[in-house]
Image 1 (cartoon, one colour):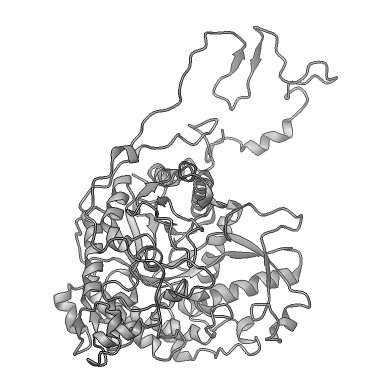
Image 2 (cartoon, rainbow, N blue to C red; image 1 turned 180 degrees about the horizontal axis):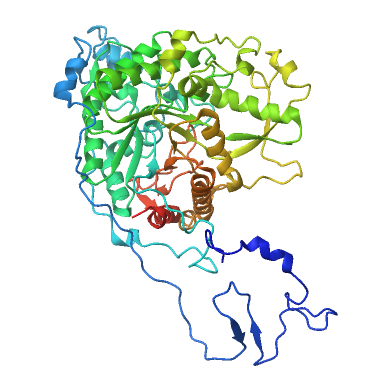
Length: 623
């Protein structure tokens, strides 16, 4: 087997194939594989054995099972430094006259007139939102030790040559400070939408009554709001060192807007989530907004940037001393457009909100941690790379997905011309002052490169579509597909949009690396939801081989991107920590843990992909 930097690559041997080397005589007299009893055959030089002799022996049953247990994290995680002043000091940096109170929903109090931000006003926030499900329990569950029987590794992944498999990466190592772990988001796992003073968020309308579309609601989700201690204990037990989660904006500010009261139960909850992470040896990564801004605050509202800053100040001043890594917004680059109902003008609003938080954290709070925002991106490649129209289509798609925010934040450059030249888009060019303020407000690139796809020019061409805002493909004006020109799928399909297509992972990295020139790249989400996994018996769901193959192949290609393409990949976070509410459905299962939603306890079970994911990093992280 070929080793890095040793000998001749295996493909160089192919030119030497002859009938003789295949064990077939020139005239076909001796068919392949026929050997007389006792006759020896010389094996290729790459095999561990040099020859074989046929023989009989005594058969003995031998079960290929051994019990290997996961290695837990060392705990607690003792911080040798703080990343911002403690709240006792940081509180002096907050706006004056901030009110901190506690809200508790009484749906019968909608007529109570006890002030602009009283309990009556809080009840009126919720008067039009109800669900057909309720939380099965209402107190935080104390963690229990994870049973050793849950930490036994599944059967090893089969490979014919385990000591030398995938030899083209066997000498590659990830740095010891590589950020690896799992991720989740508040709306998708917490439950308790109207619990302990939380205000309504944009996503809460999904599944709300009358729910004529029969969409799943998130009132229970994974009950992580009350099971977070056990969830963190489980990550520590199996050895996952980083946990990326989001804070619900409206748990901190139920009314959402600038200068509104702060909800103490929300502050206390996330304070304990962070402390529990540290107690178990897990490093927290905190996202401020994961697709769930307040229901009464549009991303296009001129008040949005200052409201987001006001919210971020409350969070960062309370937790900044213990949190090193911050993400302002999740996938804001796809938060607008015809499918969301938010105009493209929101792009400037969102970026200004992000930049305000970045500047406040670095310049006022004097935080020493890192801040970024994370982009959605399923790389589009030309369906026909020899067709200039398809090449333009791929480039235009990337402009709309990444250039729309990446240009200003990483390059200090204007919105792409392909976007600004689109008719009726309602997006104004950034001013020099805005460009200066936005430039450099991300410490590294962070994105969610689940898969790749192809792009081709629409019928009638891109220009005709871009000039016609009634065209169904407007404004992007690109046709995307996962079917190659020859009719084959690009890879194994999932139950949604992801494909098991590792051949394009390196291009995901090199496109970003060479286009936006960041200091480093973090994979903030990547994952796979096998076709109709939810419909299988649980024991089959737990043996999620396709998800394991997705992670293993993606990560091996990541190693190649680092060593062969010169890309500085600084981390990877698998999506997701649990099977969750995938925005109206529990059938889209991305989790590396199964959740039992029928036993009243929401019991979690590790899938084999979690073991294999952890194993990969134990193998490839430098000592």
